[in-house]
Length: 318
Image (tube, helix red, strand yellow):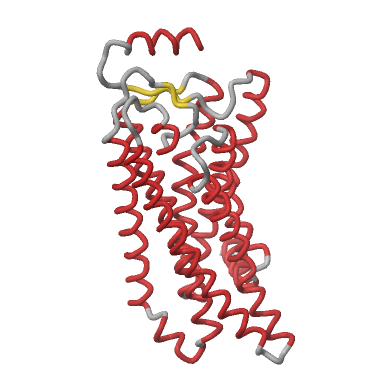
């Protein structure tokens, strides 16, 4: 494998631009590749079934046609797409040399950034929905009307599109002279920037600003929402009321902590950090998050349990 990669790299030595990239994958240790292949296959199956199953439940059960589950449906859709974009790439690198064209790499980078940014803002929309439901219950139907929810969702995808275009454009502006071996399993801004033979200072500044906005703004919005929710819950005299309020927010807090914690570590850290740390961080906020979110939002959710029982009962007796 290394001989083939060296030959490809030498062949590109006299060319001014790279036509294809080689994704090294998660590890180069042969003894780990087969076990890891089956591990990620299992994760991918669980993630796909969990997200698609949750989406089907929400569609089939009218009592789940609420703003909370409207956003949860879109979170599951984003997680399913993100997992399908990344996990197969990791699995391919375990069984063969993973070669990807320049155009395919840029396309993968665009959708990778698009889904990650979308998840930042869909989690923010879900936090605002919980704030409206707990702190402003009398105005909830007006605040979270169908039109308001649709506009928020359009905003989520528009921001994702703009952010992805900026990330992709920043990489397209770089020149890759003879380096085409990406020490990663996905085309991402950071590993691609390390291959550039031109000055990347401007690129780093642009990416840092965009990432900072897409992490700090949602984080602040979520923090403010949950601070207000906490003060409101502490003012509830009924223990049952407090318990119900905490239970509706607990799942979302776990999902937010996992996603923003890992993504902040990946993009807001010093550029000199370990590549292996980057790979692990990416796994946590993409693949593991996509697998865990359906479990986080369904295991302690009575509405989902009722919907699942109804759906299974209807399918068994029809």
